[in-house]
Length: 563
RNA sequence: UGGGGUAUCGCCAAGCGGUAAGGCACGGGACUUUGACUCCCGCAUCGUAGGUUCAAAUCCUGCUACCCCAGCCA
Image 1: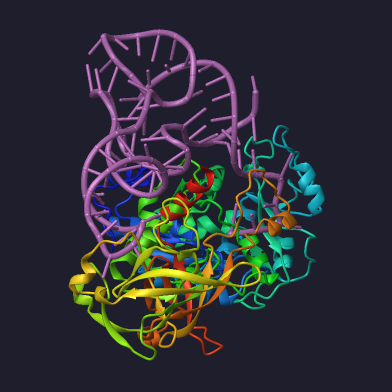
Image 2: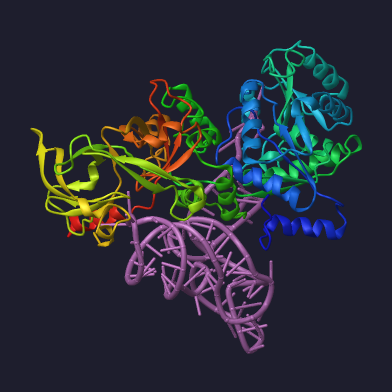
């Protein structure tokens, strides 16, 4: 468990004050997702805020599904969300709850309010409600039903519950202040009629409470002390307090809402609405498509929960709107992978090499350590043969400036093997190199005296005869192309998706990888980190790209092009 | 003069009157059987204009910019 020793945040400052002043004796939080989609990386900030705050104070955190809108919610999502939270390593020690458990409690409070004149049934049409709400700068107007007799509202509300009225024909509203400068206080809706089957309560109810009414009640019923939420609820806070205050006789707790800024990542879509669109339009294979910013996708791609936790820990918790650089997330993933992932050789975009002075059919078994920094991770043997594959980008017929790799007349070391020199190459009609003929320095075998001399480049390789075919799926870690203009339409959104977000490479891997298991992670030298995917429909091993290495080579190449 | 918020390095973010932490990114160097990793070094006077003070990013005043709110969504 992370112990944010020496690290604090403004929320904990508030809580410290609350504890000192005696407003609360202990701390209880809750994580309240709506089960209308899978969790994405953005949710991790709230997850950490809720669960780690409880831990920090020795308190508990509840998991409560905010399922008050049966039109959008499904059981699939509640299962998925729980799996993702467990995977991240958080435990809802405070218990598992559903807002739908409180439907009766909410109803009882609503009836009480009607009786006390704090709520009324409004029969205006949705359009009339909107019009009478006023605008940001003009006050709203009272509904003609606002001062109807209590008995009438009570009767109508009971009839609503009994299913005697059509959807949209009436709602129950709080009676607060239609002239409030805060739009949320202009008689907010408490209940609407919805003849939808709820994923948990079925057809038991046909009226459903609104967030502003149900959420504070859920918090208070669970004796949550600190209800942490994102900035957009800031001006709902007075309403939250109004609800708690006016229902206090029926509620055991007095929660306090505190807001913080949500997580945005550069070039990453965080809106469930858009993510859902990608899934429904078949742009991606599902919520766990490795290109998605969802937790299940990151899990499948090979991200580790510790890396994500580390990331969330580093971004901090504050109130300023922010957009965190994706590079930080990738750094965290890379950092934990570099310690634990064994190194391995695989060639993603193969180019054949023939060693003309290596005897046909002769094999040399070479020993390679699994991790240069961790000898305890052991070693393995790899077969060296006359024909090999190297990466296409590791050969240039004519070298660019500062090119450290193979070119005609140049020497290069093959990792843990021999030093070779390129003599000539074959090209196809389009001028693409198809095969490079080389000579080996037979005296340069790894570990021998002759291997000690310096050569400027070292390349990874796979035996053409002993290596195994594999498929590497190289995912761009992002879903959006950079775009200066803020295009906001849905079609524009789909067009802005990175078209090169997925490249399927048919390559070769060293023979020792034959035993790799689903979820195993490796650093393919110079190519980045990869994870064995469960999906192997073609009987070919599939490796998902997790994250690339920092690649200063690209900058060198760009620099040499430009001058 | 609608209300509610936020402004500290390219991106996050500490700081809470005593003279600007840290991370990512970036630049330079060392090392290197993969231009990675690792290791050194460098990198801000705090949105703006005034004021208070011996002393202000921190207090006060006025500006400016950006975000959120007009769902019978959450």
